[in-house]
Image (cartoon, rainbow over all chains, first blue to last red; front, side, top):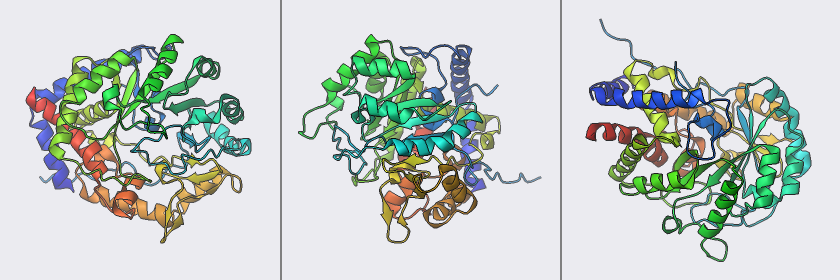
Length: 66
Length: 374
C-alpha cells in the first residue's frame, strides 16, 4: 500500500506549483468563510464551512486548517 | 535511510458517539424518481411520536456533551409527514440542530414559516435545470421540476437559506459547468454532488467511463475556482486532501474513527453506518438492523456495535481494513461505504466499488487533471 500511496503523493508533488496555487486559493476561500462564522446563513451563495449545510459531513470539515 | 511506509491511522473502529442521527418521519415520497434507492416509498408509514421520544432520550445527552449535534429528517419525503406531525416528532429533542432533506415540491409559505419557527436547516434535492431533471417524476410520470421550482421560489421569498444535493447519473464533460452555473443562479449556499449509486431498490449499474468521470470533476473544479461562492462539498474536500499531501499531513485528514450514523426507521428500527441499508438484509446476516429504540435505548444499540461488532458490521470493519491495506486513496476516502460494498459486491468486506471510482478516485484525479490542464 505504501508504495502506491507514495506514488500518488509523488505525483501530486511533481505537478509543480499548480496544486499549491489551487490549495492557496481554496484556503483563502475558507478563511473568508470563517471570518463570517457566527453570522446568519446567507440566502445566496456565500462563505460557509460545508458542515453547516451537510451534517453528514461533520466529520469532514473544510474549516481553515490554521 | 529508507522511509517508513505510511499506514493511515484514521477511520479505525466505530466512534462511541455519533455526530448526527437520521430520522425517517414517513416512508412516503410524493415523487418516484427513477434512480431512488428507497423501498416502501409509495406507502405512508409514519413514525410514531414514541419513537422520537425514545431516540431523544439518548440524543439529548449526546447533544449536551457536544459542540453541535444534528437530527436529520430524511424520508421518504419528510414533509409528506405533515407539519403538525413533524413538529410533534421534533418536540422531544433538546439542544440539537434540525435539518431536513426535501425534494421541495411541498414547500409553500406555511412550510417556510415552519422552518423559520423551528430553525430548521434546509437541504434540497435538485438535479439541475428542467432538461436535466427528466428522472424526477411523480407516480403518474409527470415531471416534477416546476413543483420543485415553486418550492424554491417560496424559500427565496422568505429568505430561507438552502443547500442542494444534486444527483448526477451520467457525469461527463460539458455537464459540470452547466450545473455549477445553474446552482449559482438558484441561490443555494452549498452544493453536494451525488453520482448515482447502485443501491437499495435501484439496481441500475453505476459503472461509468472513468475518462468521462474525471472530465466531469475537472470541469467542476474549474467552474468552482472561477467563482467559489458556493461551498462545493466534493471538490473542496479533494483540494483539502491534495494540500495535506503536499505538506506530508495526508494522514491527519480523516476522522480518527468511523461515525456510526444511526438511521432510525419509521418503526424505530436502527441501522448503523449506512442509512441506505435500512429495510434490507441478506441470508447470511438476516436484517441489517441493529435493534429498535422501542426495545433498547439507542445508546446501548450503538455501544454494542462499537464494543462488540458482529455480523455484517464486523465484516464491514474487515473491509475497511482491506481498503487501508490495499488502496492508495484510503487517506482521502476512508474506505468504501457499507451500502456500496453490499449492493455492488453482495458482501461488506470487498474493496473498491464503482462508487469509489466515480466519487472518490475519479474525483481526486479529476481535480488533479484540472491542475494539469491549467
